[in-house]
Image (cartoon, rainbow, N blue to C red; front, side, top):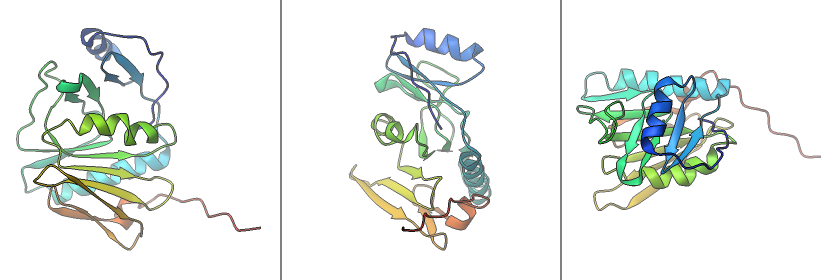
Length: 198
C-alpha cells in the first residue's frame, strides 16, 4: 500500500490507537512515528484482490485464512503496527499484546509495491516483519511487470530469496503449502508496453 510522508512527530502508542479508532483513513505506527497510508492504484487493488481470493479458495479446507489490508499487525518488540496488503493467519488469531484489535501471528505477508512504498516495504517494514517469530514467508509483488520476490525463513532461521518473472510460471508459497499461477495473480492488470529503442 502506498504511504504518505509523515511529519516525524513522536506519538505514544495510546495516541496512535486512539487516532485509529476514529480515523477515516489508516495509518501505520513505527516506534512513535505515525505514517498515513495513501490510496492505491487500480492495478494494486486488482492484484491484492486476486491474491486474497485465490488464497481463500486454496486454503478453504486448512487451518489457514487470508486477510486483506484492513487487518492490523502488532509487532510488539519493535513497537510497530502495520497493515500489510495480504496476510495469512494459520490457527487461531493471536490478539496483540497491547491492542486486542490487532493480531500478532501472521505466517505469510504479501506487499504490492508502489513508487511511494517500495523503499519502506524493502527496508523499514521488512526489518519490522523479521521480528515476528510466526512469520515464515514475505512476498513482494510488482504492479508494473510480472515480477514477484519471495523470501522464505528456513528452520535454522536463515532466509532464502527467489524470483518469479513469467506469467506462465507459478508462485510457490511454502509457508502455506500452495501455489498461485502468475497469470491469476496478474489477471486484469494491463502492463505498459516497453518503450522501443530509438
